[in-house]
Amino acid sequence: MIYSAIVFLPILGSLFAGLFGRYFNPKISEYLTTGILIFIAILSWVVLLGSGFQGDVINEKVNVLTWIDITGFSANWVIRVDALTSVMFVVVNTVSAVVHLYSIGYMHSDPHRVRFFAYLSFFTFTMLALITADNFLQMFFGWEGVGIASYLLIGFWYKKQSAGAAAM
Image (spheres, rainbow, N blue to C red):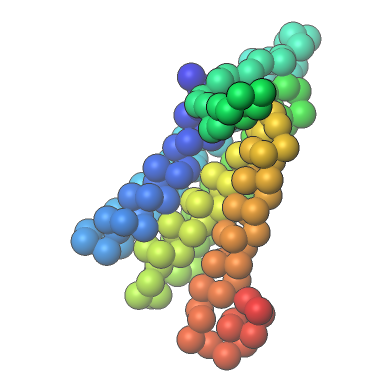
């Protein structure tokens, strides 16, 4: 359950900010997405400290859903957590939480900051999908998602000539 929360809470924050953020005060989306990232960063530290330094070898798989089930072929979305994944949880989520926190002040006057926070949380989700991948299809989803999220973040200020050129 804790692994599913770590992986899927950022996409919930991204969906809220992206779909409903414009109907509320922008601070709600900023604080919600940042709060989620701080929370899952703490959970990531709990996972690492609870398993990595206790001498226990962690190797767990959480089956989330079945993507494809055809005769002779089945692809499931599985969250695979081992020692390397627990370290990457801490790295990705701690850095992402700090970036979210810094962005609250940095983006305070931007009228489209809700969209920025939606993109940033989406990036975090796709990175977590990549590092917890148990099969190549899921890894491809995470890899391409990171690419799409990077494209969206690089081209965030698409009205600026330099940002538009950098996104191409």
